[in-house]
Image (cartoon, rainbow over all chains, first blue to last red; front, side, top):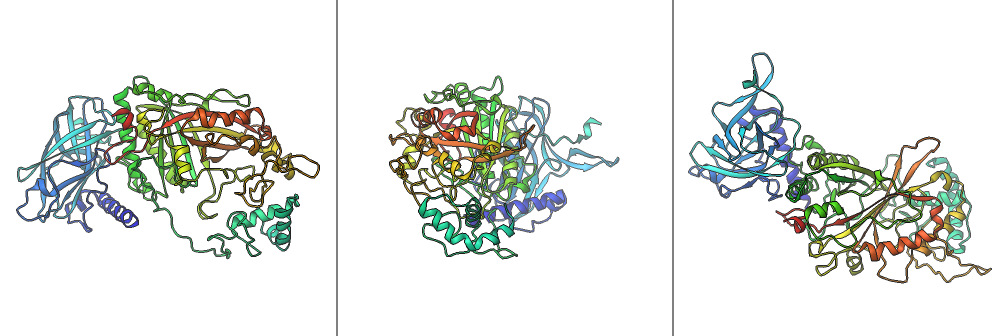
Length: 194
Length: 434
């Protein structure tokens, strides 16, 4: 148990380290072993439906080597919301998420948070997708990169489970479910609101 | 009380005084007796530990003499208690040093589906936080990295079970009124109980905050009670706690891991509480105000008579060691019972073996108001399979007569059904809601 706990804490710290330096670090090869699923099946969160995490090789389809953990949505009555989580690429080639969709939104965009010309942080659609480095992770979190849900088709109620599908650059997809949580943050400006 | 000069001055007398105290049952001088208790609790023994292991650490593993630099303490922040299991954690778990009890009221319109969503969220939070992993959407994830034996235990009040449309155990209701009660609504009842306990108060605080962020669309806070015991490492694990009257409190308690504990605490599948409660139990949470200011009027003999145990070791007035069986038949030279009829332990004791409870209480010490110099007491917590047949008869006897009532006043009271634990992929309450 002690070893397990230590490993878990290491994984958390590894993820946190990536977080501190934001997108720049995430684009680099991860300095530590990837933060693979930190908890197996705690509730419904982060359950991967897209395939098993098998030994990777250069030919592996993206959907068979990418997993997501700690995924969650921000609760919202209507309009927009965001989804967050940690993608892990067990393969030996970088993999890029190029698009996403969900039954609860008319449109899902891949967003980054960046400084605009006026020096303010704002969210905008990312160009080139989210690239998960080989053997590394890509963190989506409030105040940084995230999946942006626009035109919600139903209220996202706290505790509800929502399905998301991401498409990789090789055309394969990963579908996962994540819980909705009340969250007071993730309120940054949107470029479109200007 | 912590004056090293006092300790040094009394050390030479401690041996003789202690033996006299233990053997004779005579009341030793207050100063010397207090010094013994202090030495024993601190693990400072100026004499070879006398037989019986009286007190806390005199002969325990932690009984090394502390130098000015102090021993190098082992870190315990990484210690974890499993979340998943047949029973919820935080009941048979060795009591942690700190606990916060939160009672929540369900908002209007929260139905069975919403209860399910809430309990899924809370169970996921607890599953992560208890293992030292930040909750999802945890905005202070670094605070989660030292679980320090964190447990989160959920309890359902009558309102919760009604909203769930489930069959309520017959005992799931406010306790009958007792004449000694001075209950305040702000410390009574509630639809959902969170018992959050850990050996680190920062961990407890962060966990409470995280859980309440996830309950806020479903509930409002009804009351919060915070409690404490000795810090980890002050005494050997398993030492019976002391309350703020200085009494050893909780000696007669079934021991987790024994058949007696299982039968006193856990519901069976065929039990009257209903199948969804199999592996669960009930919790009685009562806030007992202890009037330290009037307790101060009472000298040591009176204090010991009121409870029927010695203050130094918690031994019954007829015994030598804490766990000695009290002899209620023993008489003084002039024919009075050694353990008075009006004493707490005499009144609490039942001839009916079914009338037992498992206590897991915490001290509280809040800011005094007005002319008081203390607002302190006990967050009394007991677990038992059936409130009506195990807890209530005992409380009735104490209500009718217990000298300790002179200085104690129940000011809060709540009863909760504690559902069983859950398996991975499940959630606490799934036997009721799923």
